[in-house]
Length: 162
Image (cartoon, rainbow, N blue to C red; front, side):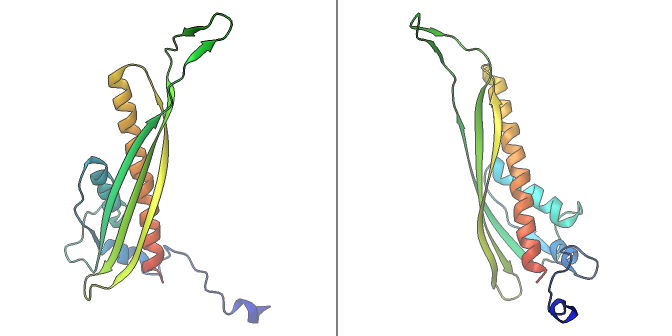
């Protein structure tokens, strides 16, 4: 049994001896456009540096492009007995789908270490009032941006931990 386990390569991703934390702290995140792209970028910087900001001398660079779309399903009640529309004035369901494509490169030689595309979905209840609808959508975009940044950071950590 011990012979079978000797070839096991399982080890903690963020363990003290792995060096992953130090490598993550040496990753710079390129500028990106748009509000949601900036949210993802800010979250990535925070997650990879532990709140210390971007490195002064980066060993790695990640370039992220983000797209986001919001959709909703308006609820309409239709009474077949009276053939009349009943105005529904409550919130209706919606969702924000955010996709991020990223490329991780080593700064010293420009080698691409990882390139991938990830997507997340955030659910949202959209009220009838217009400002509240805009605010609810923005909150869902912020939640999706945080989740997307966490997924990308985990991918990068797994790549740098090898």
